[in-house]
Image 1 (spheres, rainbow over the protein chains, first blue to last red):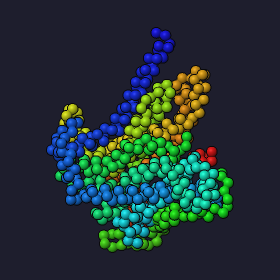
Image 2: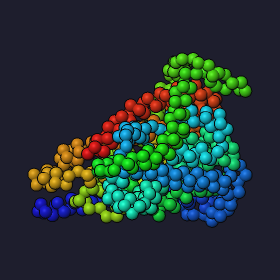
Image 3: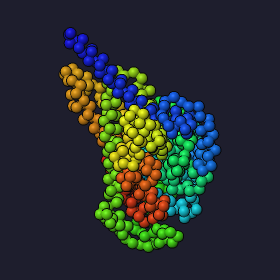
Image 4: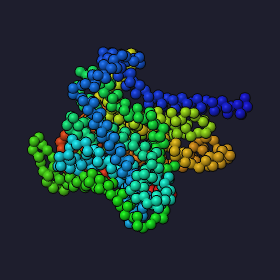
Length: 285
Length: 307
């Protein structure tokens, strides 16, 4: 066996091992979701006894039971979550783009300082101001108001950072100047010329913001105590607190499926642009 | 930001950033200041009576850092729990992400279908942590599929309540964190490796360097800044660990508060006991630790910006 032949066999083996490793990690990620899907199709009796990968026929019954459950109002929760996630993701992306454009396109006093300031507050988690936030909410009678979860999303330093990086890479100032010569006002220029150019960045951030809001648990759980105002993550904790031994397991899996399904469906459609968006926001290679 | 612009437009810069700052000041900065302010007051509810607010100086901090009757300082214990679970998840997360990133970027291996693989390994990051934790609770419960499979294979005679033991409970939290984040880390590291100057690899090849030498002398040292960045952001995220252990342990950090985290303590002070004073002190400590760690990230980003 000559050197060349040995090298080729070695490469084939390494390649096989590499594929094996990659596929194994992928299966690990899919496995839990597959079990969730399968178990959501079974009856409580089937689930109490033995695990099998063959799907059952109880999907619609479980769906009905979960949907009409008296203590956990999942349709209401999904509606609340949807309202908050849609509006806050729209506000986050629009105002982050606007703020980024304001700093990118204009020269003004203190601009550098403001930019550095926003970068500085980027890593501070919302948890550390929760005390003041909740106290203010109680003081001004704003608990159980979904608006308290929506309005704050206007100030999103991380999304701002993503947007300004995108502007630096894509927006030629000549375009803005040409618009000015044509008599376009500054606000109109942003909405009709700059925003369309930023469409790819806006789309990615819309999805990220939507998912983040849909999954958000800490602040909503402190703010929303009224059962008609609760969002889905809060209901997951309610599910955990319920008496497990008396619970219909089929319904339980269905609740979890309903909580994660909207995001997974969106993700499957747009995963490609999301993967691209993961890196460009934080580190430019 | 180097473009030349006429001065007369500068007011628009201010106008466009006003909404951001108004909202930031009302919903972030002011609550932040209030939080610090609260940490110096005694202010809690005991049954139906409201105690305080009375100014108590640093008493809340002293109380937080004073050993309990059992001789442990609770906040340090919870910080320890948080860090143990973070490390248990982060070590495999970085190891597997690094291997995957090397596989994906290897021109010799030339792996096909990378887009699909990346989409799949990133998926757990999109899933609601609270729901993911609930799913794991159900799967690892005494009537869950994991026990059923182990029983049918004859490994167990009767079901084990996994989350009633410290190591399995912590491992489950760590495993979920690992699953949610290794895809993200992989994608970051792939971008990092792709950012390395191609000619360095070619030069090494011409010099006859083997794969290990290329990895240890070129890839790893040049990847270090990004590794540090990802590690510190992961650590900051780890400090905030809440959703997963909160749902898995029904908010009590079972068994015996060994999965109880710092933010779960904050949540308890805020939610159940309405103890704004102690909650404020916990927040300030969390803020200080995060701020110190953030300066590293800040330096990294700023350097990138100036480049």
